[in-house]
Amino acid sequence: MHYRPLGRSGLAAAPIAFGGNVLGWTADAATSFSLLDAFADGGFNLIDTADIYSRWAPGHLGGESETVIGQWLQRSGRRGQVLIATKVGKPMGDEGSGRMGLSRRWIRQACEDSLRRLQTDHIDLYQSHDDDTATPLEETLAAFAELIQEGKVRAIGASNYSAPRLAEALATSARLGLPRYETLQPHYNLVERQVYEEALEPLCRTQGLGVINFFGLARGFLTGKYRSEADLGKSPRGAGVQAYLNPRGFGILAALDAVAEAHHSTPAQVALAWQIARPGITAPIASATSVAQWLELAGAARLLLSTADIATLDAASAWTAAA
Image (spheres, rainbow, N blue to C red):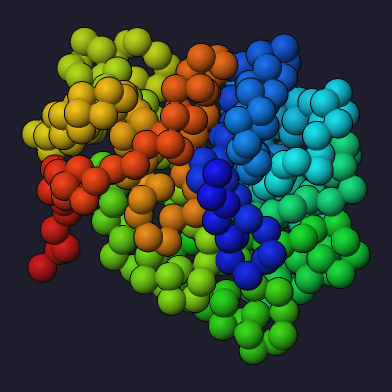
């Protein structure tokens, strides 16, 4: 399997990352262990999680995903086979608690908390989950530099940054001689193309950043599961795909169906394979709640789309820049 570089970090990832948001939430501990075993058995290596996963669930405090991953690492002994990417910045406490954002104090505390839950001595890729305009970039990047110097973090990345702010962060690192963000985690898929392609993609490719995009299946829409208003009740995520039930969305599904049929594959595999084939993409993130579901998605890494296939998908999902 071809591994792709995560910027200049010296780290390299298989072409699909496992989305750890489900671990310890919609996938219980036993299922999570089976999923991670199947993931690693298939030669994949990048597990993406965050301290906040899954604080939104009733009775959860955050850190559930990291805790399950840590238990799996101890149980399996496979720490050396995987890269752990986690994030800091989203609220881990109430407003005013100081348990959010990208201040030096919180980054250092949150890192120690994540290391403890993950039961490891280092985080391979530590990502700013959101931009924090209230904290100077110099403070944030210097805090990450300390963690890298101490061996607790190997590389850093950004998530949910705009192109101007990402460019400013990269310039700040260069000016001060601090570690730079080596990766970006943007929202990107066949139905959500414009924001990434218009400004972030050129910046990432010029600067040599790895790209690990989230919502690669558009909350399940690109699996073909949701084709009418009546389908929205099939899962809790149904409400999130309602906006895609329009002529463009239906055109994308039709194109996915056609390419999938030609390759004896599935719409989900084709949707991920299109992202894998996109220049500049390191690894789309995909979540699964059963081993069978993961094995289907993993098949995208072996699916080679033709130039004609990509042209069909590009045309169906094309966007037009605002005048």
